[in-house]
Length: 354
Ligand code: SAM
Image (cartoon, rainbow, N blue to C red; front, side):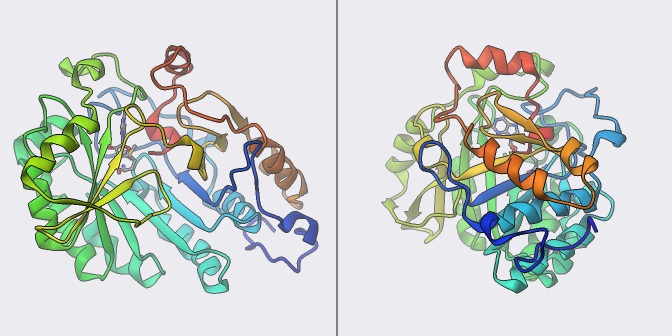
């Protein structure tokens, strides 16, 4: 039962459940990000401590359970699924989840199935992902310098990520690089990254570092000291590049410009310096089945008991999703008193899904 795709004609999904998910502020939820595992083969300094501990496997949703929750969201109008982690490509059987979910692309109920990855395993999997209907990948890359890359990721090898990027491009996947902007760490590299991405036809998004994750000043890393407002970065970039505002929307929080000199798109994700909450259309599912209603708030709902407690009916799950969405906060609490509370609650980026 649990591995069936949603079928509007099925008694498990009566027609009354098919209206979209709308929150208390009138925002329609069309986008689900799913952390398929909290494990990762990197230990990026702003995300995880080197000796981080992972959740017990018994608490992690099986691939079938993940597919079931994702399918319930699709049934309720979610049009875009992004699989993330941890590192999604280190989860055993990950491609079978992609295969299962790709049925919703075939049925027309889903517009996009994509993933966010560190790229370390992409060389092996890019062609299969493309064959399963994945059209875009976001690859996290904060530097083009191998030594710096090792310092930031602790365990990563830049060369492997570059091979992964080449394989993704060869497989016809649209590639976007995500780069966390870190003061004094990689702020001298944005010009180079813009040129590099432009030459390869990759989009690039710069992201402000957020006060999340399993960090306590690890390895000399201090988020407060390394926070770099992208409003400032944009001003600096505009001295060298012609940044033309464009209407393009990827469905996420990025605001894009076109770099006239390269023709490439450049996005800015500015959770701290500029709010984008009024247009938020997203919620997140953790690998353990917690539905996180906002990355920057503690409101969350545990779905695992509903999934495991009702193997033959999704009615309790669907009802819980509808009720949960009404509790989605109007705005994140970064930069407010909600933040220390979040840190205390241990909101881990790898578990929650970036
Ligand atoms: N392993 C995959 C990857 O590297 O893309 C997916 C998970 S990772 C948590 C997703 C994204 O979250 C990455 O782009 C990473 O740079 C970003 N990230 C992690 N911690 C962050 C933080 N504290 N602030 C901003 N972005 C963060």
